[in-house]
Length: 460
Picture (spheres, rainbow, N blue to C red):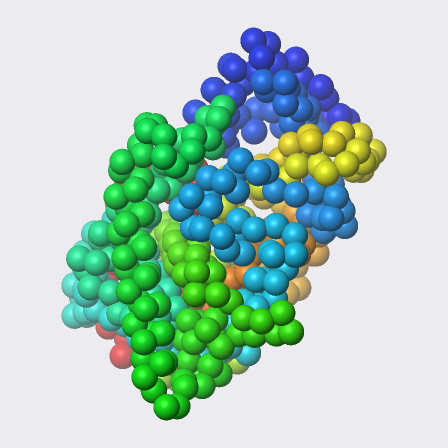
């Protein structure tokens, strides 16, 4: 494989290549990488696009030269049509203000107060969805299960609201439909205005009403209760919404609309990516029962009645299995893209103003230069005594100033769910040794249902 820059001639204005990327973005990027090397340039519809596959260049783009790049305006319009004006869809000073106000709600010291809410969601969902009698088993669709459990977690931590099965199903359908519509719109040449009829518009508006009704009702109820109460909830012990409503700095606080828009983002993005990561983790654990056994030994030594935040630092193998699952199946495999704001040079490569720069996470996570035997599940890569991974080679949550706001939240959430499953269940992959083929639906999902049999252990 070449390490040099390759310029690819994409005939017919790049339409065949665009179709290839649209049909299977993972396979298309892999072909470009293996055929042309670490840096690949091409034009689609007179737009220059550069794929950077190496971690050194990725860090230059996302960290060192982050001020020289911005996110693509058309993508922000797509996401804004769903989530509104929030910390994902804004840029510049407005983004900085919202990010600054929201960050305290997701700081490490806040996790302890959220853990009781998370634990309650886990125990309730497991009792409703999985066998509770030792020796009993059930075969389930893993993605449906992880969606239910992560949705309940985010609703409880965001609003202190416990969802019903019916509500969870309705909202899940809405989120998935909106994700598919967003992926369709990503590849359209033009983004139509909201008032213009276009394919999928009616369904999109219907599902948006479902989400906005749920979230609007929660925010309105909280605002009403705050106005009626003589004493305000202490944000240090409240949920995320309490933190958002109490947040302020020298520039003021979040407006009610900004609270609503950020709740839309935190809810819809917050559960789907975690559900994706946990789905693949469960599948990998079902394939590797020996690792499950080692995890139980580690967890038995750390547990009392519940897993406390401080104890998570003493669970290196659990954390390593989750990281390895996200390496092999990164939840956000839709390309990290940026647009150059000026002419510059990245690792010896000239990048002209308005060039679209893409960072294919899937290919970087499976590059044998940084991860020997990349197709093999090997949690030891992430154990404390393992060789250092090159900076930028592993970035499931992104990097730089726009690193995922909920990174710490997602890490704690996934660890709690994973620990509960390991302690209480044996897993068996119904399809044998092979996991389903993945596909990109904003979050990385199994193309066919992943069926796993959960057998309740008799260990208490």
